[in-house]
Image (cartoon, rainbow, N blue to C red; front, side):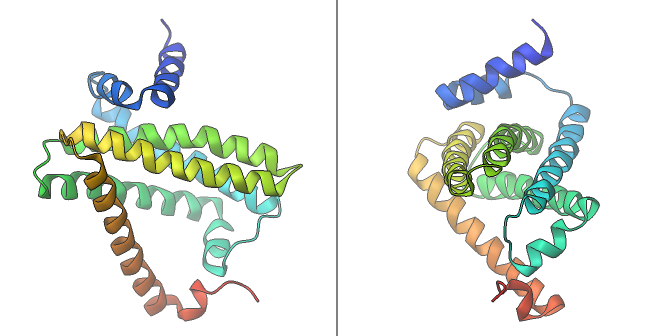
Length: 197
């Protein structure tokens, strides 16, 4: 079976049976170099698609518009965001008694971001003729991401209480978002987080 076919089958399994997909993914033995390259690749692709969405007329807050105006800047920021996500998935999970490793946390984040890229492409295509439907796809894909991430983190760390995993994940994201907002206000001023009026 070719690599493309294996990725396609695993993507299908991820949407149909995420718990089994997580087990298959973690058992793949993907080399560390491939995991690191994957993080860079999905960051670049995600930044490119986000930049295309801006050109497609999607309105954003001033900070997001500034960051996405440069594809290179967007790629760097996306990579940093994903790298921080890997660290949080690993460290917070271990703090609660999880058994997952950093390299496996990296693999999980890269894989789920790759899955989300498919929805990002779909959203961009739909945006051309129906912005409202594209927005709905964005909401659905975000909910799907939270669901998949909860299951994959639980499988990564050996947790059985998915509700608790979801709660901790949301609280961690809120705390990280709050810290990011404080940093942005300190360096860019309050207007960086305010939508255009």
